[in-house]
Amino acid sequence: MAKAASRWDVFCRVVDNFGDAGVCWRLARLLAVVHGCAVTLWIDDLRSLARILPGIDPERQHQTHDGVRLRRLADPFAGAFDAPDVVVEAFGCGLPAPYEDALERRRSLWITLEYLSAEPWVDGAHARPSPPPARNIERWFWFPGFTPATGGLLREPGLVEAREAWQAQATAPGATLTVSLFCYPNAALPALFDAWAEGDELITCLVPEGVATAALDQWLGGAVLEHGETRRRGDLTLASVPFVPQDDYDRRLWSCDLNFVRGEDSFVRAQWAARPFVWHPYPQAENAQSAKLAAFADRYVATLTPTTADALRRMWQAFDCGDGAATAAAWPAFRAALPELTVHGRDWAAALHQLPELATGLVRFAEKRYNLRLS
Figure 1 (spheres, rainbow, N blue to C red):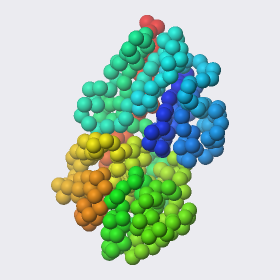
Figure 2 (figure 1 turned 180 degrees about the vertical axis):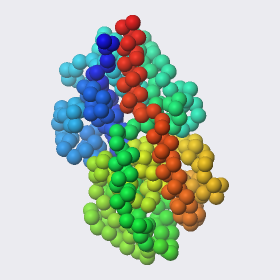
Figure 3 (figure 1 turned 120 degrees about the vertical axis):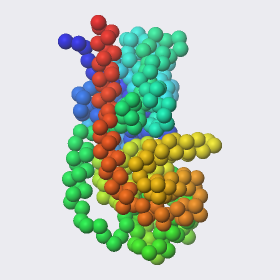
């Protein structure tokens, strides 16, 4: 029987608080629970992970959760370890030199998991070799994406069925539009809150603790929105909600009429939720993230009517730029497009389901490389 790659390490250095930790945890859990691999997640900031993973002690150096061994990634790198069959270096975070030495001795497989992008060049870069300089190590690039030529997206078994069952229990649409707001600091929010408050329908906006604090402070005139509290002005009710485990966050997205999401992890989960959403990508120098937003929007609106496609582009671009006046001006057309976007969200999620699943693809790729070594 051919040897299978069964021992995996995942390395994560947290840059975008919950997105990096969230993606790496989902991957590690899928490798362990679904594929039966022995997985260690090395992560430098356990506090971020603990916010979305109850039961994690952010002060412990070693612990196990859901079959995944968690170890703190510290500088300088210290502690005993064994080189795995496969290491996944998430988002080009780099590996410690002593660890690279061990990989070279064991001839481990090194996979660099890149950030998600819809840009066309990703198709040609996926699953390409990239040997590290002055090292005898087999290293490959792995790109998540939205086409069959990429590594696809993370998706747990039964996710779509669970979403369908949850949404089937929902009652008929009510008089209140429910919005989930999870974004980076954004100067457009006070103007958007004004537009919602002065509109012609009731809106309830769910805001996790610690999100958009500056905008909330400005709009509420310094009245702190405490945990579990609500504030109403005009037709808008702001509700402070807790950070919740990932599975509960999925259900929050499934339940809302519109989801504002950010970064990568919640961005992907909004697509699996099959609901309309606004994506706020991680801000980069010179607004480099705007190219990623535009590339994804090009794919996402391809089958929409021109009016709805234009409404989505205007809303996303204005919010990404933090332009309050433009965001408030874009809201009425975007709101009018929500019925079509709701139908489109289901079609889009169904199309994504036909693409490769990222963790499964990684496992099959690693097994193939091991078989080639033994042949």
